[in-house]
Length: 442
Image 1 (cartoon, helix red, strand yellow):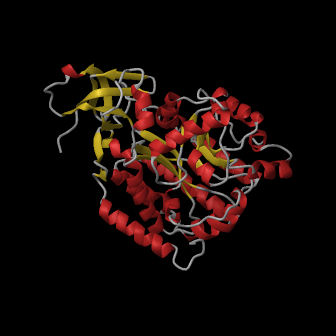
Image 2 (cartoon, rainbow, N blue to C red):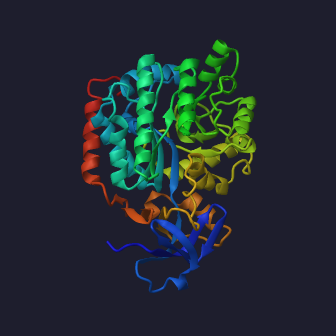
């Protein structure tokens, strides 16, 4: 395959607020080194001709669980988060994960992600009984082969035992060190724990201390619906965010909270002041009876916000639209969250929040992570409306090609590096076997 040295685009979307007609860019060593008019690239060796297309940044999925794709076809009980975890997710799904189910679900999620324009994922694995020391490495091998980027971590808590939780924290630590040794920051680890109802305060403080000692991010699930805040108030006499602040959990400046769909104003104020980023999962939260996150208020408090799916599949364009539409409805205003803000959250906002400062835009110094979309539009495209047109009317079917670091990883809905047919067959067989004889199938 000819080495890619640049691209000519019909429309080049550099960021949510900047687009140029008949512009492209030059790539060296996987980085964008110059933005230039197409005429300067004509006839150059290795330059992709996409003058009939729209070229834009790829997406970042800031919160997902690859293994959750195995819940295909299962009927979840109609419960709030805490009893749903206790009755369904923990015993029926997470406790039964093996290295084989981890590999297969990661492969399937990689396909689903790249074909939806997602090239960077923040995945949290919950598999307390799978083989120690190999869980994250199993995911990493798949993601690296696929040519994608990821933050990978094990959910560490005390729901099995404190010992089990500490073992998971140590595996996170070892994985972080191993990824640092590669000298390549495309795939990273992080310290990850869970909630204030599945972890004691000493455990949470231990996890936070590990992250600070390593100068690494720490991430949690937080307030996915009303259960956690209620538990926290009942047990500690304060909200979840107030407890985290009291125990010094967020000191260090590298923190990421997932969900946050049910928040008190004081909590958003605390998180904004302490620099805690948030991943919102609008579609998943609605499906799980968890409410609608106050994303507009998060932004008003200066919080970095990213967009996640909560599972490894789905139409990310649709998810991006859910994000904006739900905020419009929640706040009775079409200005509560604009399409441009939604696009920014799905691209550079999420990537920056996770510490990838060279991902999410197509500008000099950034990684050449981009998608080539069909250029057809029912309206006359301009610099002022092309991003909104992509936001409202493009879908995975419009993606021609996906690149990471200037390398082609997906073309016409198929992975370049993975065996789509084998993976989809293995996944279907795995799902059938996983649910054989189990409840929740009606």
